Image (cartoon, rainbow, N blue to C red; front, top):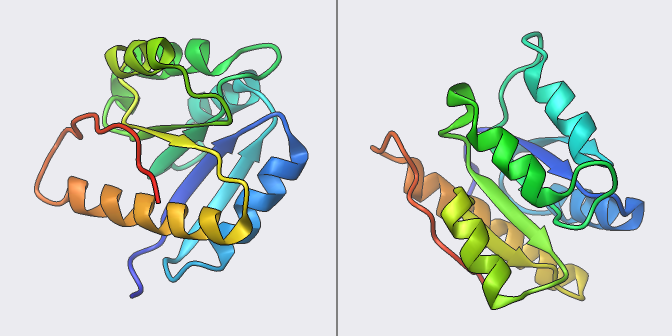
Length: 149
C-alpha cells in the first residue's frame, strides 16, 4: 500500500531513538522523508525558515533539553501557518494528566514508544495511515489520542 510521500519531522534528544524511528519508518510501505532534530529549539528554527517545506507530520518527544515537547507544541500551535500540521507526541512516559494537557494544547495523537522494532514499524504504519484517513476531506484534524498496537 503505497501512499504519497509524507514529510516527517522528528524531534527527540536520544540519538538511538531517532535512529530506531528512522529505520522503522524506512521499512513501512509508505513513502516518507524525515528530518531529525535533537531538541525543540532546532525544530522550531527549521520550521520557521521559509526555505523549508512544511512537514506533513511532526513527531515530538516530551523530555528534551533547551525546549521540551510541551513548550515546542505550544509554540507550534501559536503559529497560524502550522495549525493544520498534525503533531504526534512520541514519548516513553504516559501520565494521564500529561495526556489531557497535551490534548488541550492541540496535540493530534499520543504514541507511547514501543520496546521492539516490529512494534514500532506497526505503530508508525498505523499512525501514518490514520493521519492520511483523517486528512481526507477535512481542513482541520481533530485530536485523537493513544494509538496502540
